[in-house]
Structures are given as structure tokens and as C-alpha cells.
Image (tube, rainbow, N blue to C red; front, side, top):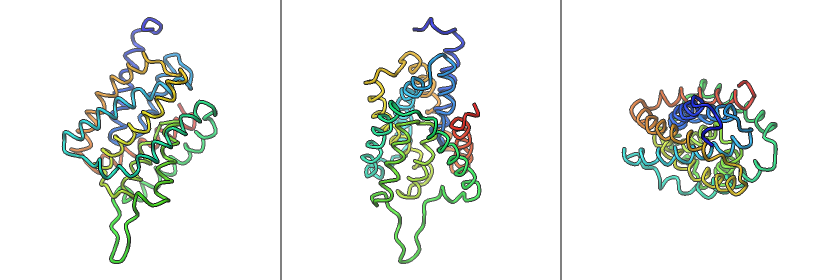
Length: 257
């Protein structure tokens, strides 16, 4: 209930949601901020992991609407990966209710550090590939791409923190979107698999709806600001934000904070 925690904690939850909504919309890894805030407010890691999805669904719906109004609408391009991501989200949420995330968090924390270093060294990873004469463009319907999108959904359903970053990379490399359109696609696709995970967690009674609503309010506002920043400031902001987001997610996964 509202009276269970001091007033400033409610402010902290809303504020963490705002920053996370902005970061998630521009790049990803905002959950690396909201998960510690939720746990600091008095819930355990499992409840925080489930409750965080309330805010993610709200912010992604808000961000998708804002991108659509601004004319960034890669929705049709993203349709081919929806089944793989949704199936992955279902599997990941199911696993999160049964498996300790400790070992997986260490693995992904290390992976995020590696990705951050590679993105600093190879910024063209956030540029759609341009095949030469006679070359074929890697495409989202290929078995390899579908498997990667499924694995991304599994991770998103399981942990969530940082999932937007590999999803953005996949949309750029396999769907051929630029980073602004990729952010729009990432936002709507995150809504899809997170909604699936949210239903699984709700069925298990693992969600604190009061805390989740407070983070969601801040997340919605942050996502709207993030859309404007992504469109106005473009590729360089997004690339830098992706690197910072990866390091934030890695710190969370490796227990730095």
C-alpha cells in the first residue's frame, strides 16, 4: 500500500522511471536503473524483475505512439520478427519464475561489456549494411536471424535489463533500419514480448502494482522526451547512449550496484 514506504521513496520510483524511460527509448538498459530502485523500496529481486515490466509496457506504448505521430513508422518492416520475439518472451518469463538469474546475469554482464567495447571500436555496427554488387542483404526471415530474435526475446522475458540494445543492433543489421527507425521498431517490439512476460508474471502473482504504477508514470514521461531526443539528435547521441546503456546494464548484471 501507499503508506508502506516514505513519501520520498515514491518520488524516487517516479524519477527512476523517468530516466529509464528516456534511456530505453534512446538506446536501452533503463531497467538497470529501475530494478535497483524497486529493490531499494523494499521488494525482493524476483518481485522487482516482474514489477518492472509494468513500466516497460507503459513506456513502450507511449514511445511507439510518439514515434508514430512524428512519422517514424517502421511497423511493417518489424512484423516478420514478432512471433520469434513473443515466443522468446514467453519462454524467458516462464524460466524467470523457476530459475535463479544469478549465473545468467554474470554471462550477460560480460557480454554487455564486450559489446560496449566493440561498438566503440566499430561504430558502423549501428549503420545498416550496404551490400555490394552480387551480394545479398542479411534478412530478418533467415533462420539465423529468427533464432537471434528468439534468443533476444528469451533474455527480455527473463531479465529485461539491456535487452533493447541487442534488439536495436538486430533491427539495424537484419531488418536494415537506420538507428532512428530502429529505435521506433525496438520500442514497439519490446512492448510485444514484455506484454507477454507481464501476463505470465501476473498469473504467478509476482507483481507489485502500486510500485509498478509509480515507475510507469515516470517511464511514460521519460519515453516521450526520449523520442524527441532520438529524432532531433540522431545517430551520434544514440551510439553514445547505447555504449553507456551497455555499461549500465553490465554493472547491474555483474552486481556493481
